[in-house]
Image (cartoon, rainbow, N blue to C red; front, side, top):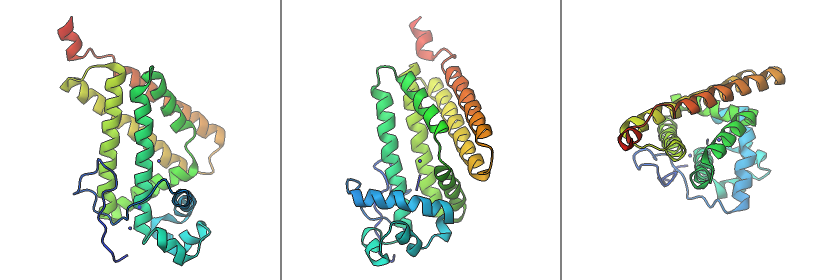
Length: 236
């Protein structure tokens, strides 16, 4: 799920919730309804996954999208602009997924199903991209800023989902949900990095580990509701 930078300065926010101070990477306005744009973003993911953000050249990316370099520049003026667009697109997809949880008749069931699917169907490509983004954040301050903001937004969405599922929105409840949101993200990201770092691992072992990760997260998820909320205490 995460990934977008020529001499021209655009400074367009990556996402509607990104603060201006955090959205400092250069990026053009992207039309995600354009199927050509979506096709390019899908095609270049494998290039970034195999060559890394630093190693992939614009020529590599254009070849991956089966386009001439000149035509490729018409859509994305720089490599960083592509990384920005990938991040923005991933956040848009996450928005839709969390919106589904918020409006579901059984949000608990939908939440757990999506979490299980995320772990079970995490591709090596996605694992490689996340690991590369982690590494790039140590080298490129702009990517680090976007990454921090993106993670803060995702934690907020997790917290909102837990409020919807368990109820309770007191400061104590929100603090507890925030801790569990951080645990979920930590374990999913750790699993992604482990999968990328050991691509030759037996698939059965990898699947078994994924199941254990989900089982652990499910226990933590259930535990996030075991503490009686302040609001429940006051209502008794």
